[in-house]
Image (tube, rainbow, N blue to C red; front, side):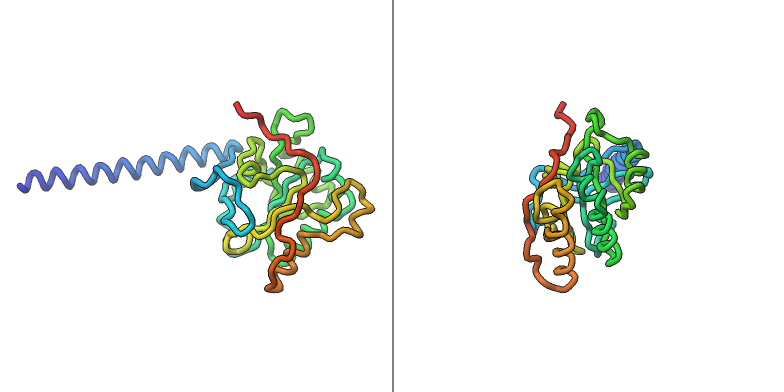
Length: 232
C-alpha cells in the first residue's frame, strides 16, 4: 500500500468517526429538546414487552410537573417506587383523601426510597390535569412523592403495562422489578377498608430492607382504567 492510499484510508476512517459522533450528538440534541417540551422516552430497545417481577425495569426519561427532567437510571443504587395516579379516579381519591397514600409515600422516602408518581392520562381525557393543576392537587393532599411525572403519551405506562390508578411497582437498587400490583389487599373504593387491608407496598419495602424475600411480589392491581392516548 502506498503512502497516498494509507493517508486516504486514514482520512476515510476519520470522516466516518466524525459523522458517527455528529449523528450521536444530533440524536441527543433532538431528545433533549423533545423532553424539554414534555415528551417522554424509553431508553434502550426493550420497549416491546412489559417486565415481569424479577426482570430488568425499563429505563425512561420524563419531565415532572415542575419541568424538571428525570431518568430512572439516575436513581441506580436506590429503591424506586412507581405509582400510577389520576385525581379523577375515586380509588385514587380514596387513598389520598384518607391520607393513606401520602403516609405510604412518607414512610418510603424516609428510608431513602425514590417515589415517582406517574400520570399517564391523555390530554383529551375529561379528567386530565395540566402539570400545574396536578401539582397543586398533590400539595392539597399533603402528598410526598419525590416527583410527579407527566406521561400523557403513555410511553412509560405502556412499557410497564400499568393498567389502573393506582398501580404500584417497586424497583430494587440493581434496577430489577421486585413488586408489581395494588397498594393493598382489599379492592374497594371504601375508606373504611384501609384499616383492615394489608398495605403491600409497606410490606414489600419492609421485607426488602430487612433482607427478606418479598412474600407478595405480584398482586392484583385495582382502580380505574388508565385513559391512554389512542394509537394514531
